[in-house]
Image (cartoon, rainbow, N blue to C red; front, side, top):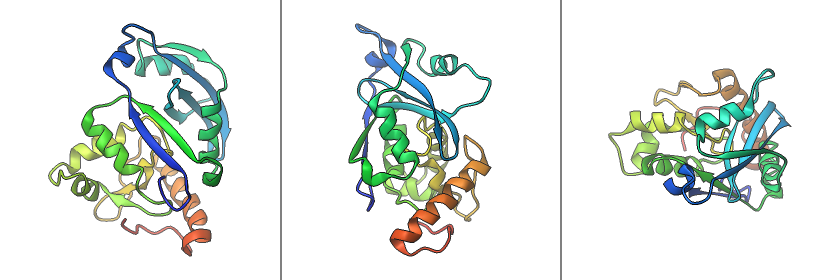
Length: 203
């Protein structure tokens, strides 16, 4: 989301020591919020947003988080970082000058996730284009796996990636949700770039 909307989103990699809780246990604050496309779980460390996904009705969010962060301790509470993330989910990019994402992953995943942040609102790219841009032209399949492992739905816009033939491809949180995200962003893009509807236009 580092685009004409003027919101700078960046990734600070979570170190192995932070993830494993060596020295000082990682504390994660989380809560469930109402978003334009349904309820979501937003979680953060002291440094940034670390996890965001749809929230089911009958569901234990802490159990879900523990599968991703087995050594962390958790606190159910609202923090300022969550409010910033919610504004981005509501496409209020002008209200959030910057947002840090504190993510755990491999160096390759970090490359892919950072590239995702460069895709403008209302546009799409392909797995192969991402592989080319990060200098790994033969890694389209691993790129797809990294895109699918994205832990921060929507803010790291993995929904803006399609197949080379223009078909939608997969989406970790459901194809219907991917289509909804793209259609909603096409409406927002109309006001900025004059686009009338979403089309699989390559970035």
